[in-house]
Length: 299
Image 1 (cartoon, one colour):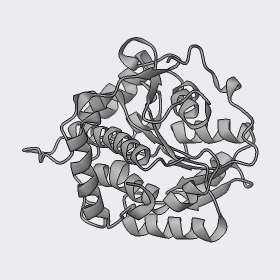
Image 2 (cartoon, helix red, strand yellow; image 1 turned 45 degrees about the vertical axis):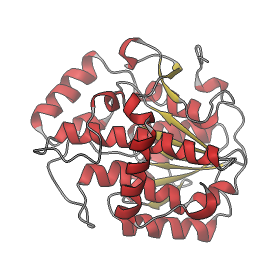
Image 3 (tube, rainbow, N blue to C red; image 1 turned 30 degrees about the horizontal axis):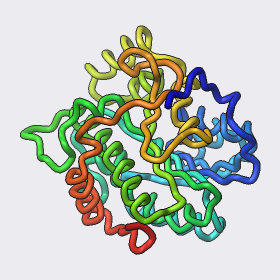
Image 4 (cartoon, rainbow, N blue to C red; image 1 turned 135 degrees about the horizontal axis):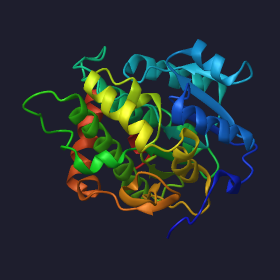
């Protein structure tokens, strides 16, 4: 199935639906939030910088602090959301960092892996009951075309590479989203796990990479020559979150050459991302690293 020439104008009315978007301060997260709220959705902006989010989204937005690199912050965010919400219809695991120097999270995990994967794994598990109480609930996990060239996330590299570590986290995102789909399907769950990636999009993810070489290559050169606008880059995850045609376990990505730009379409995940043994090993590693277990709610 291919979503030919889909645009956000085709999104259904989202009035009455509650969604969480991580990393909603700027870039893809903000563009996604704006598109969803324009269709009537109630969106919770999960952000590290509440003041910045307030400037970007306005005083009427529901903004809550979430630092995905810190598992204590993830647990606090989930607990507060349970206090104020009885259900959740869509969780969009969008936030991420790229090409950071070797840094450890408060719990001692490599920062990119902690932020991009472990935080989202824990958040999804902690919000699972709210999602299962939702209507046609979905988890959308944002990966990257770079997942195709990454090392498996449980293989220790001989030395730290900022961009190599980023690629590994994007493979982890793809593996998590697909393994979550496999487990939900085995449990005949109403919750869908769908993957998306934006292609090459001009966001501050590239320009904020802390290695000067990567800032130049990805931000200065890549954003000018290859990237599509942010609003367009958000289309795949918007399709995954709202389109009736988006199916569990699919990867929604640009249909153009190299998956860099274009309209949302169904693309193939890498073999590593869909391998059952890989998915199981990453799931077990993630449970051990976060202390979050999905329990009896899924297989």
